[in-house]
Length: 259
Length: 318
Ligand SMILES: Cc1cc2nc3c(=O)[nH]c(=O)nc-3n(C[C@H](O)[C@H](O)[C@H](O)COP(=O)(O)OP(=O)(O)OC[C@H]3O[C@@H](n4cnc5c(N)ncnc54)[C@H](O)[C@@H]3O)c2cc1C
Image: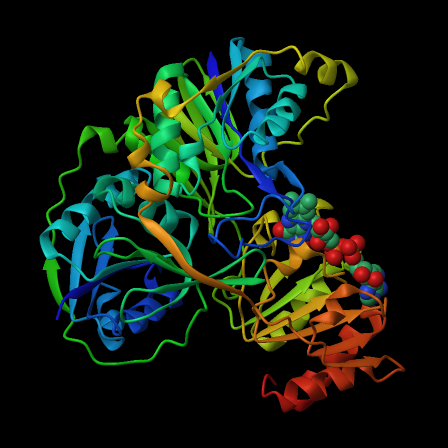
């Protein structure tokens, strides 16, 4: 089974994140850049599939030079190799453009299963898996908390507001996962050492046959006009409970007309 | 006036509040027209309500194939409808399924898409709140058609009579849209409580609640207030409460009128999911807990004292 895992490098969601004042893009210079958390669950799931069914696991990342740190980190968990789509013309690409580029890369690799996180912590759009499936004309099984494989048939439990749906499709398919699906392994020392030697293929837009006009600032079909910091919330009243805390709380709720 | 297509989200026979919010939002851009995509009979119980909130037309696309396959048939029907009606905008709920439909629609129409929108100007400029609620972004879609997903609880739905003229849309689902088959839908009990993202009051518990058993306290307070129950990741990871109720970065984003945090420290990833709430109340025994930095009212104390007392007091006042 040929498996590709999509990995995105994002600014750490545990630290303050900013947009750049000049071009409204995510400020990655000040941020601590990490693997999008949900993608680690996708990597883990891919490795489990490989352990059970054999085959090959490849990491696919689109991103600037700096994303290679995240690729090595991903490889240290165990995948066999990676593809890094790297091109200066990609700066400013929106979700639609990203799906164009990743679809082109996937067509080249031609995997049976594409695994990815259900959303990224920076954009949080949840649009990419279905955009890819739409472009590639393959199935999308999204929002999985469980994945089972029988031959070429994939079945997921998809988390929904009401509970879950059991959804099934034949390969090739895109499968997106939530963090309820597994517990990602930590890279071992051996894994970290081995990752340094694993093959990482770098591809440009030209290699993928995508024209620069279709991506980046020129190709983007959405644009940020302006951005501002939300005024921070200010702390209100704080009381120490001296036996009347619950009553005081209800007093507040009553004044605010919630009770 | 151009139509504004609003994709209806419903829970069974009930129109979800976010749909009414979208119908309200749509009026600023054109004539609100609802689109029902579902199995046979999906629209009938919804039409009256949609009309009460201003739907002039209701496009109805019903078929077993829409209900039986994941998202793709819905996006195809919607794309066809957009081509036929030339709307001023397409509004879809910012839920998992809503965003997925929007993503496919964007590819089909080669059109930009904006997610998690909280307001939309008449000229199509959208406001989004990003980065854990810390940053406000004004964005636009190039070209004439904003495709936006609207975050629940972004505005107050206002009734307005609409003609609610039903127009049936014929549904021909192609094989390429039938690749992912839904073989079963399983409801997991959540009782009579309102849905987390739509509730006007949310009462959440964190690690401080201590156990699944103790979550009864959280539920009790929630029920007295007619609230939904939420949980921090520490609480869901520890198995105190089901994961579906997690609030935060990797859980649900809520924006209720009132958010009550019980035994939650207020980590940045938790705040990501709740800090646009109108009023925030916190109970925590640690006076230094970061949650107090954003709480309009905080009680420094043991939740096992404070919460039962508050519940008792509410009962008294009722
Ligand atoms: C990528 C990433 C994504 C994440 N996503 C989320 C997310 O979606 N949602 C989320 O919530 N977290 C998320 N987290 C985790 C987050 O960083 C925190 O670990 C988590 O929110 C802590 O939960 P907590 O406040 O319940 O627990 P703690 O931080 O342990 O706080 C417990 C609080 O309870 C108080 N307490 C204890 N006993 C009592 C008592 N008897 N009475 C009153 N107060 C008491 C303590 O003083 C303490 O402040 C994420 C983390 C990462 C790295």
